[in-house]
Image (cartoon, rainbow, N blue to C red; front, side, top):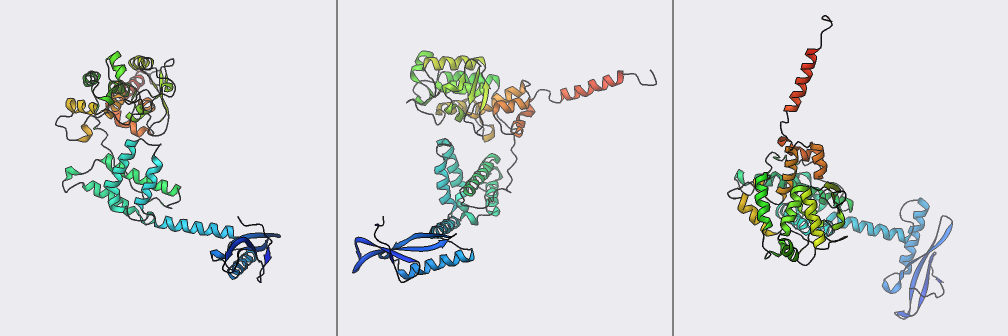
Length: 424
């Protein structure tokens, strides 16, 4: 703070100073320079700086003269506050000009905590390190082009070696492209970049017909095995509940995924107040596409969840499925995949054909379509953002062309039965 000593004139017009009451600069008391100028008919005083910090009468005089000239011609900064803001902006723009993708990704990743699961953040980091960083990690954001992103895409299409069989799955390549898109969207939002070089990069078509789902017999076998998981796997059960009910937590999570189509991440977030036993619906509040949805509970789920919340006294914001310490889960028990691999994945090398926890969700949609449920309803139950995502199950619809042909046959028969005008 500048002491409120008497303001003194200098030999320069518009430059004043106050002396510090105790601190000296050389043989005289330190001076704080003040600029005075008139703008919009009003006199304004603005602090310039201490003499001990390198500010002088001459520098103050030059600055106040520049401000007066700018006011007169109507361009440039008209106060020190404006000037300093311009300097900060230029410095920020210079930083944005030079920030590399790798440096920005660290900022981006930190912002994802709280909005994505640790597993999701870890997965994105692996995509970035394995497929993006080595090509453009050290390039400034502003220097990255469409060609750079296309180069990453083409390198993944060629694969890990020259063997065509070693190329990455289309879904993996699309994940990398989508990550690039989101990085640049965030950079533009934070004013670290001006253009998104990924916007013209096309995603690869997915082989949606090759979608693994469980038959009813397979699901029955799997659930029976999951139900008997022993308490030694601490991530697969809640001990007291297991003792009372002889069932594992991973079994019940699999059951909800199978009969309600929930993703693993949605089960991690499911809370007691998300379940309405009166209406028979459970609400997914945190979904992959950020849209909430309500799912009707089959009786098997209604009964199981009601028994669970009552046995464990789960209420309000308490999580339905918890780790051994009562905290949030971040992954499915390893025992699930071990059992699934043993039952269904022996000798299978194609990842699209391998059964995983997400296969339960695909099974839910597949069973609905095979039972004749229309695709729009399946879309809503699955929480798909577009109908295109649901269309991959369309080939499972029973007699999907039969009804269409039958409608034409009926129309043709009705037309033939009507007498012509000549016969009437």
